[in-house]
Image (cartoon, rainbow, N blue to C red; front, side, top):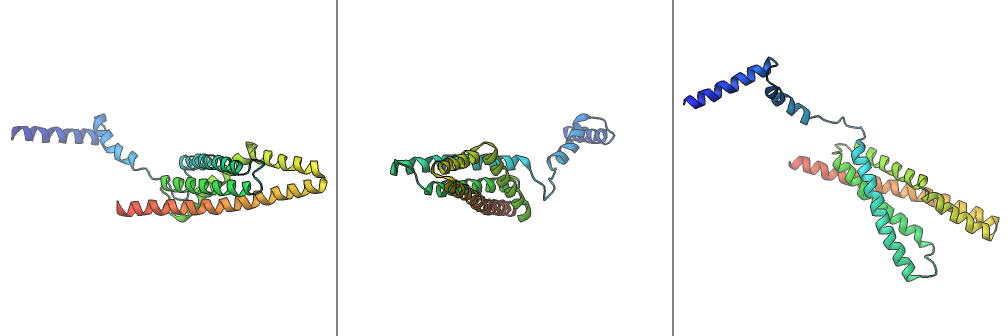
Length: 195
């Protein structure tokens, strides 16, 4: 009984010291829950999940595209042909779908708007990587060189084809990103409801 009374007195003294600004331990006990419960304002981009989603999108795209190229050239050693663009766009769609789902889920996107915002950021980052790392430029130069070998008319057609592929491919990727984000957001909401 005496022990219980002493423990109760010690706890009371710590609480009083914490209220008066005394003990650091008592202060930490009151501050820690407030720090761990910091909420991120809805509708804002969380850059960690956005960058993680972009990395996943690039990794999945390169992995599956390399497999598609290997299979394509194994089946047709003289050249892949026109279907290469379809394969790469399809695999990029799978990559950005998974990356956007991961971003929406890890960002704990609570609304469709927040999830779509993350998807658009990932889509934009992927496009910038494509353009600035030279992959888009290399494709364009290859088509222009091919056209130059065959004449100006073919060069203009090659540039036109590149523009259509870029536009159509990235519109497809935007749709895949939005569906991925909505899928990831849906899983996050289900977990929150069950937890």
